[in-house]
Length: 257
Image (cartoon, rainbow, N blue to C red; front, side, top):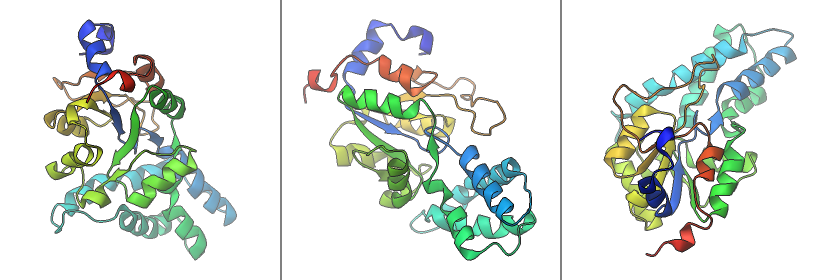
């Protein structure tokens, strides 16, 4: 199903059954590149140096995938993302000519992922979805406190937080997908999962969630993310605001349990 078919009676019927929204955070809901770039450039300027902040950010973000794969060998198959950030910051700063960064600045840089900013459409879209009766919950590989702080930094209070830390597993592990339905007491078929990441959407689809793909320029290179060839999702929308507009008023209160 694609965005051109959003007026179908079947889709409208499905949307009326939704009770909660679980959203991917990194790349889907927040800009990764911009805040990291700004933070490291600010540190460089304080040392009277210059740095390619965009390249630094891409190098940092590129370590995310390998860290997920490495975690599969752990028992339980999870490690806090902050350990990755701490490790990456310590290795990247010298390689970019930023030696002898004061400890407080290094620590602040390591916590940048707690201060990632929502994409412009996210907060108004989420507010509208909440006003239409849906629960709003991050569902992310991020640490629990990291997700909490992202919400606070952007002025948005989550209804619940589904973190990899809480499940002691990353989203590559099937066991994490049972967490939102079990805790919310809502079947996965009535939970909307929003992501820009094809692999997450495949997992969500396999576990019965209503899947929504939102294309994003995660790399800052002007290239939008794309679904894998032949991949099926329930809905494709350009942004969170357009998604919210599809819902009827107070859809939650029209549902019966």
